[in-house]
Length: 287
Image 1 (cartoon, rainbow, N blue to C red):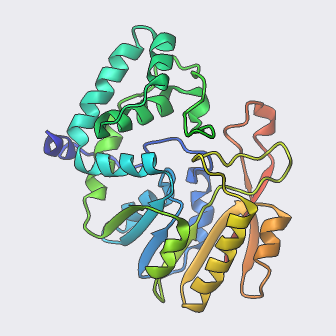
Image 2 (image 1 turned 90 degrees about the vertical axis):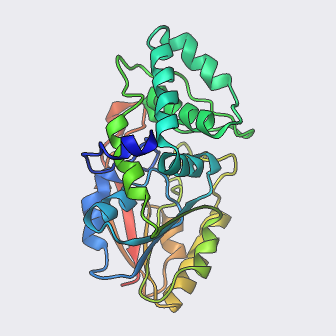
């Protein structure tokens, strides 16, 4: 059955989850900052995968080494790649039950803690499509805690995109791992591109959002990242990094070989629509 779904792919793959800090709106800026040529693409904070999917659409034979610390997210990538048919069946069941009584079913599923692979992934995708603003957030115990969103007819299954994603992930040149970002140092070689898109440093006391996993991304982690980036630079890698327009970030990347440029962005998850515009982020690179 999985093979049958792969054969109907007709679209370019796009992120199958809405992820805080997703890069679809910045894609043109990032493309403008990619090196003209590189060997293998490494992305240790994979998230929704917008940058990887964009690159693979243009270069299907590109070697990619991608990872994330969020084990549920990485399980979703692997399941879409390997067990698409069963996953779609499970999502179709969620969709059917959701449309009978959206609120009751949503909170019922949110309380569940399934142990089986298909059920775990379909729950994550279902909650992501139906929760408030598609916001992925967990508490200190690792429990998903976002309320129900206001949707009339959410696309819970999205068979066409899942099929496109599954098809492109079949490439033997794509390696997907669940691990800490520092592990990339052992894989990246001279001429490779390493793109870092970590949870952003807060630019104000109320802007702190790092709860992608139950372990927050701290300033100490940012310092580890900066030291790792310096080591990758010395290996001859192309290093590209996105972050908030924060003095802390700029201070960690103050060596003369880091080039910093700012870009205008919108914040899609702010509950106040008037506060979603007029923000700046920075792009840092060593080439």
